[in-house]
Length: 409
Image 1 (cartoon, one colour):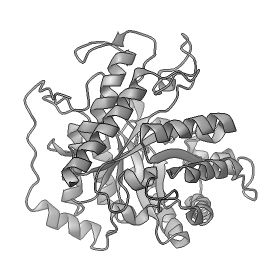
Image 2 (cartoon, rainbow, N blue to C red; image 1 turned 30 degrees about the horizontal axis):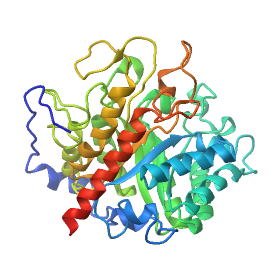
Image 3 (cartoon, helix red, strand yellow; image 1 turned 135 degrees about the horizontal axis):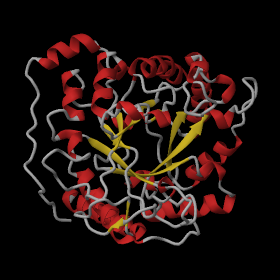
Image 4 (cartoon, one colour; image 1 turned 180 degrees about the vertical axis):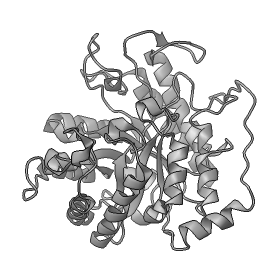
């Protein structure tokens, strides 16, 4: 896929004295695990998806699908189709919400693990790894200052959430689940409903990370996926770079092994560069990139997982069919396919990126005037028909692997 220059490239620089100062702030006891230390062993032999998709012994890029809270509610037949499609695509990872609200909806004394048990069992049967996103608060446990029963309210008691996370690790580590993401998009109000707060999220992380590691010494922990946004006070959005810097200053990086980030670029291709810096450029090629922030705080080598990226094919408004389209709300299926293919090469070109997930597998609703844009990022339509992006992503993953194999020879 060709790479286009739409403007003057932003130079990258890190001040020489900043790293030493940052180490003093973060301490010297940051995790030293490699990405594979927290990854479960393949369950289906050398030919499994896990054995060929960036696992232990393989330094290449890993691939995944981000399902949100859909796999847990599918019928057995739907789940079988979804996971068989994941194998066909060539992905290794399934990112799935492990929602506290689902597991303990009504009571602190009763756990309902059954739906997630079925997801883990089906994944293991296919040699796939599950990345649970530990998140979302039942109404009985929500912080009352949030002023809502919204599932994105932070918990009133971080230790209660940590206990839920500990029990999850205790239950699923013996089944090969060792990699965990703690919350989703805590830098925007839709997913931290009381309003984003680096201090408040760090407190949750400080309670939860030790609890998970106590249950599973092999746990590999991801920071909650940062939404790629500008700071917009009226919407209670804090930019991914500002939020990461605040977390680093508070010492939160000592609790995790990797940063998680959600760089949606549509209608631009992920590889397209702009004068101001695209969401992908902001990983490592802008002055205030994620990598430069990590370097300032003594964590220059911390891996970055792109646990969501993609493009919607339906919304109110006009669809973009080219990168140059203006004033659009979504993209055509043809452009979504181009974005899907380009995502692989764009992610592979960034040294810090270890795994990239496409969001999502299937549309959440039929295309109607009343359906939301967020429901139409799928590789398949709601009725199961494949969009062109499905084949484009499969071909790009296969092409990447073939290239890696040739280079290894």
